[in-house]
Image 1 (cartoon, rainbow, N blue to C red):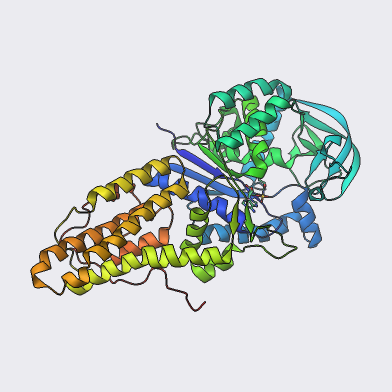
Image 2: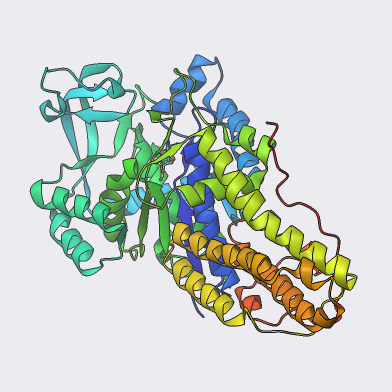
Length: 519
Ligand code: MSP
């Protein structure tokens, strides 16, 4: 039984509303999930919410609500965003769900019994905002701590620690012998540099319940709750384990789950995350997995951060891009296209409204939209919408783009794949200009040539719909409908030349991306 392709996103904190950065990451994961499905791979795509911990507890308190009531309210907004983005996620985890908490308790009991934890007194600095312990090394040259840490207090506290030092050598070996484990390569070098030049501090995995009670109680000491990152990272495994996944260690699967008859999902193939949480995913998470006897994920795929107009997005300055507002005004596919085309997975990006409009107008309205609209309108006008005999004039060039796009999608190179698809859009638009079907139509002696041109254009439009399905699902479905074809082109194999049958009646052409010149 082959394994399912398993892709995850970071689970977002529910201490506010979603913004561009959260939406971007989910769209990236969705395109990868859709493309794998279109290649015929069974896929499991997981996203969700990180609901425990101090950040969420404080946000709830600020609104005078109980933590769970606050999470329940916001979870609706976040789930709505997933639907609005047309994510094809198979599940949506909330870390407050019993299925997750049960597996986390099992993991903790197992690691505790195996002697991975010890109890010790910590004395030092603590940032409640970032929920993290700080040392002298974290001070800036002027002696203060970065304002991002918020108020830093002195603290003396007894906690449970996870021994990490022994894990350092094998982790370095693993990263060196699996170059694909952390992508892009410069992020891998960053982690290797860190591991080779520092001794890992043991990880504090508890918080006293007297100070913070919004978390999963430690199964072996009710005076403590689980550190939010230990809890959150576990979601990637708790969801499959709770469903009886055969890839999850047997002793983590609840007895009540039974054995799943579906192909295994664990280990994950890709964890899509932002650069700020790399250490948690590339250092702590593999060590946790190794300690619990679970195979390691194949890849941590790290994206950069979006800014707006060259500034960090921040609620206080008001320069936050609200993905819902953009989608309501411009349509989902315009949003998906801009973020995927503008930013490669890795570097930081900069959202500008002018840049968004420019891409909408040049690449969507005048590029793809114009090609499809004029190709189908001419077929309607000159041939009453009936597809002429098969012609292969653009077949070779199209197949080259199809092969290139597939290879790029297999390497999760989404921006380059879009560039490749747009080279075909541009080529086909040039073909219209060079062959001038509107002139051919005036000369009855050119009827055969006009048939050829119209076939090539309609078939390129159909194949573009197939290639675009992972990226712009709504547009892809519209192109199919305008071609008079049923359903959506969900299978990449449909990108073979010659799919349009002679005599087939196309549907009604309509603009895909209405021009917004007046806006
Ligand atoms: N809850 C943790 C993740 C736990 S995963 C086991 C967390 N949540 S978060 O809401 O702060 O961030 C969620 C994801 O959004 C992270 O991958 C983060 O990098 C990403 N982004 C948050 N702001 C971003 C931008 N401005 N740009 C791009 N992505 C950003 O961290």
